[in-house]
Length: 235
Image (cartoon, rainbow, N blue to C red):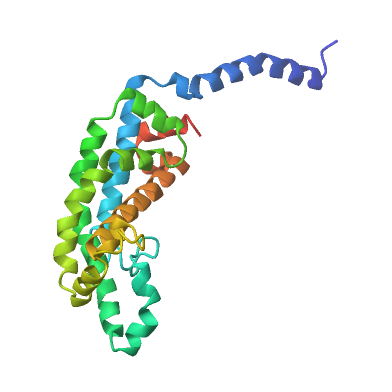
């Protein structure tokens, strides 16, 4: 008597199951399966891509002004004084200052790329593993820690050169000279160029974070086999 069809099917499944499990385990990667070389290479590729794309998007005409996520508004005190300033005929000067501030930021951002890429080159294996396991913004946090002070120094004179074209900027700086000592504003907000420099850095790291999230969400979609392998291992 021959076994029934259902029995044959069941036996075949029992034979194929171990093979299927073996095949799956061969292709499933976890973080522990990655070599230090792959982990480091994948993270460096992600950092370079995120930094380059962020700079490319912001360091162009109206890169800040036309992007609601990073557009730089007036300093808070000027914004609060806007109704009164408009009554005194300063409304157009306020609008012009907003444009100048955002153009100043876009002029400064391209200076960031060499420093960002230098930070990538100096990254250790420990840095790479920490970035892989550190959450959705660990790439951005790494860049902020490694580059923020140096970039602020580089950005400031470029920003000041642009914002000084506004007479309202000059008057703001003169008026706010003693404000930090009185606790009215932070040191960064006591000058237009200091305020814009900080907001330009915030905008840069915001855009790097956007690129990082995109890589983590769809590493295969980047077109890089290494990014797909490394970031796919932690999904």
